[in-house]
Image (cartoon, rainbow, N blue to C red; front, top):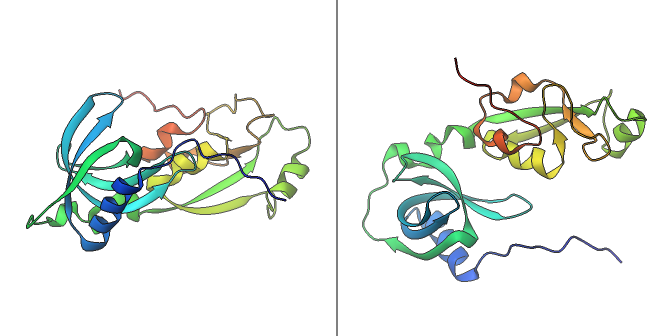
Amino acid sequence: PCELPVRLNRPSLEELAVVTRAIHQKQVLRVKYHSLKRGAADREVVPHALVDSGLRWHMRAFDRKTQEFRDMVISRIEAAVPVPDTEILPHEMACADEEWNRQLELVLVAHPGVNRPEIVQRDFGMQRGELHVAVRAAIAGYVLQQWNVDCSTNRRLDPTIHRLCVKDLELVRGVKSVVIAPGYQVEAKA
């Protein structure tokens, strides 16, 4: 027997089908999107990828309203329809999504507060005390969140929950997705 955690969030197959077709056929979508900050709003988006964060399914898309690439939770999409004969501009294409195309190599180490770091190193198959993980910058925050990696500057999070930490936080500074990582704080601008 093998048990897995129950999925709490399952995207609507109807909306997921429309999104995947739009990605495959390189189409613009008109959607009603339910945002935690702004509520429901109509948007035109140019989706180019799907992301399973381990908690929710997202589409990676260029949002014409905000003029930026962002992750949009599939279960928050309502009434997605293709917008026929709409040109996708070069700055809206996947090749222009810098966070998506940028590869990071996260170097994770045992949390300094762990009593037996050699056990954590064994659990994660570390070599010379490090675990190297290649990820897209756009999803680095999801990986760090899902694995409970302590990203605080002083390694202040509970090591019984956060067994790992990022070896060098400078590597992830400025990466937009990392703001959701446990303990990570965006530095105030002068």
